[in-house]
Amino acid sequence: MNSSSVFSMTLLLVFMMSSCNNPKAREKAGTRPEKSRIPQHITHVYLYDDFPQKTGKQVVEEIKKILPNVQLEEQIPLPDSAYYKPRKRYLATVLLNGQLALKSKGNLVLGITDKDISLRHKDYPNWGVMGVSYRGIGVAVVSTYRLGGLDKMDPSDFLKLILHELGHAEGLPHCAKMKSCIMRDAEGKNNFPESTGFCPSCKKYLQGKGWKLS
Image (cartoon, rainbow, N blue to C red; front, side, top):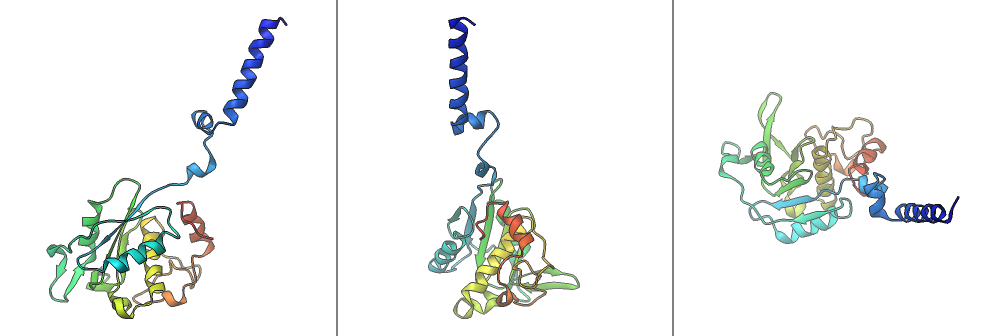
């Protein structure tokens, strides 16, 4: 082998070693760092009407401990078209449809209100709920009303309610594996005091979505 060939092979080896140690080079070569495979979506939080900004900020800070990127957006009005006058409630599906217009691809939208919300459920034309979401579509709305309102609710239960609905928004169904799982079906009751966290199956799924769950 002549000196020219040796020199060329040396340059090739240096280039290959440099590429292996360079994250950008690995990305171009199709070997991106493992952590980049986890979705880095944004959760946009909107407060409806006169929901207290102070409480909204506190809630956002709690969500940030679990979700990678949370932003508190401007307050938005409850649409007149959502008001159900016979029961003095707001139709949750109308609120969710409005949130779809605020949603960008890959991100989540959470609406928070202190007003009573409802939907059509089985044989009930208007069923009061704590929260609801479009499963796997990335929008959810929650209310403090059925947890006792802002003054009486347990903040821990409210956070679990939010995580429950966001779990649905990420694609999770109700969980029947553990009664202590946050994704358990409420069946018209507040079972969140019994919830201690996510079951292993639900936790694994959400971790795959970028949630910070220990």
